[in-house]
Length: 259
Image 1 (tube, rainbow, N blue to C red):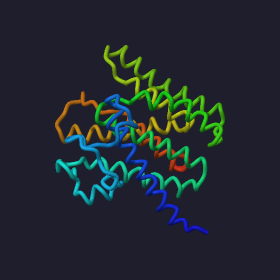
Image 2 (cartoon, rainbow, N blue to C red; image 1 turned 30 degrees about the vertical axis):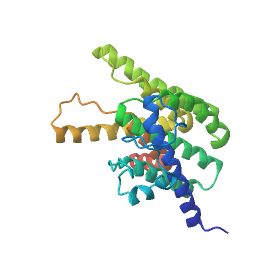
Image 3 (cartoon, rainbow, N blue to C red; image 1 turned 90 degrees about the vertical axis):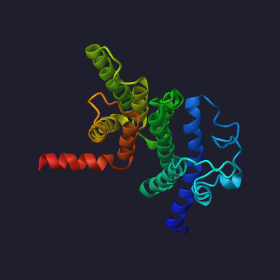
Image 4 (cartoon, rainbow, N blue to C red; image 1 turned 120 degrees about the vertical axis):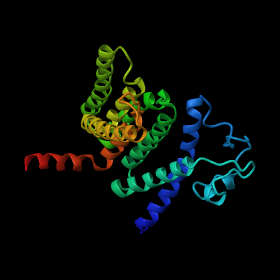
C-alpha cells in the first residue's frame, strides 16, 4: 500500500508542474497570445527557456531569480503560483481523496488561480475561462460531484443574477459602472459547481474580505473612498474557502446564532 504522504508529495509535484502552465496562461491570455506556441521564453531577452531552467520552484532557486542569459530578475510570482498550485493539489487529495471529484475541484481551483492573478494585473476576467467554465463545471457538478441539477442551475442563476442586479442598481443610482461583467460571469461559474449555497457563502466572505482589505489599503495609502479593487480575487478565494470549509463554517455560524 502506497503511503499517503508519498501520494501527497507526488501530487504536490504534479500540481507545481501545472502551476508552471498556469503562469503561461496568466501572462499570455490577457495579451491574446497562444498558450501553446511558442515555447516559454524570457520576457526580457526573448531567449527560449531550457527544460532544465523550467523546473517548477527549483529552477528559480538555482538561478537566484534571474534569467540565465540576460540576468534580468524573474518575478517571484512564477514560483509563487507553482507553490500555490502544488499545495492546492495536495490539499484537495488530503480533503477529498484520490477521486474523480478531487480532479474536478483541482481543475476548478487552477482556473481560479489564473483568474486571481490576471484580475490583479489587468482588472479583467477573461471570458475564455468563465464562459466555458459555466457549462463545464455544471456538467462536472451534476455527473461527477453529484450535485443536483436544481442546485447547480440555481447556483448559476443566483451567482450571475445577484451581481447583475447589483451592477444595474449601482448604475441606475450613480450613472457609473460599478461591477464588471467578468465578475458576474465568474460568480455564475462558481455557482455551477458550488450551488446556490456556495454562491451565498462566496458573496458574504468575499464582500467581507474585500471591505477589510480596502479599508487597510486606504488607511495605509491615505486614499479616499473611491479606491477601486478588483473583486475577482476575493470571489475566487471565497469559493476556494467554501470548497474546503464551507459547510463546516456555515454549521458553526448557525449553531452560534442558536446559542
